[in-house]
Image (cartoon, rainbow, N blue to C red; front, side, top):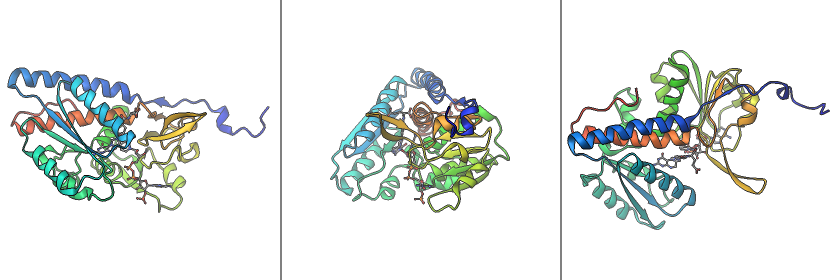
Length: 307
Ligand SMILES: NC(=O)C1=CN([C@@H]2O[C@H](COP(=O)(O)OP(=O)(O)OC[C@H]3O[C@@H](n4cnc5c(N)ncnc54)[C@H](OP(=O)(O)O)[C@@H]3O)[C@@H](O)[C@H]2O)C=CC1
Ligand SMILES: Nc1nc(=O)c2c([nH]1)NC[C@@H]1CN(c3ccc(C(=O)N[C@@H](CCC(=O)O)C(=O)O)cc3)C=[N+]21
């Protein structure tokens, strides 16, 4: 008998697995139906352009997945691959060309960009109406002031899962670990809008485990494999794991989140897996944003697929 076994070993792994893959598949189906209707009634096909600078293999996988799912939804997909040493003017002139292109309703420039390129400058060159990532300063400002904005896909996907799981989020204690412009900050804005009490923690936060233990909803967007253990989690909490970390286990490449899933499922009430949690929701929300952008640009009523 293992006398040093943690008390966790005796607690059943009861947490509900939040199936982001299934939720996203359902969302994509509803998007595809709207795309078909838009084509039949208005002769318009939503188009998404993705720009990839350099040849990071992990980025290439996301870009390929996005392309396949865009086409499966009946949308037009445009891919632009530029070499890692592309200069700023070449990238900016491509963005301007996509801004003008009538067949393109959404523009995504994959981040991070190589160090010599200023990503703020590039994001702010995108027409805000086509900014399906929601990273343009105009959309960031709209979201921050509670106005109708293009909402960043990953936090939007997390919010959809949370509302489906919990209904109203009002009054809940939420902790977002990570303060990036692409996940942590917009996630905090969305939760605030839902009347949550929001704490944003980061690498300089003191006693992170104690902060996290206070959370009814814990969102992890850090980029550190399995950093968050069972003893960081309040009993029954809802845990959203945004992290996508490639690690080697038993000689094989595997994806793990920022949360130790196996340990956390003894304590949490519900938890998203990696893969199959937030990742697929990000792509589904990207398609939803592209559809929304297409309707707004063409002066058509927006479909209510997200409600
Ligand atoms: N599922 C999906 O669709 C997506 C997944 N991701 C994944 O989510 C993760 C986060 O991405 P992103 O926001 O872009 O990452 P960034 O690297 O931009 O930000 C990471 C954040 O985590 C904080 N942090 C780092 N180390 C610690 C630590 N030891 N303790 C507490 N906080 C820490 C940083 O703090 P500080 O600011 O102080 O440096 C920073 O705010 C990554 O794994 C990424 O791959 C990202 C986008 C989409
Ligand atoms: N401008 C920009 N916008 C982004 O939204 C953006 C970005 N840049 N740079 C990179 C990050 C990361 N990201 C992911 C999207 C989908 C999955 C995804 O589909 N993940 C699958 C598994 C994928 C796999 O097997 O590799 C899953 O978690 O189940 C992951 C990560 C978007 N990002």
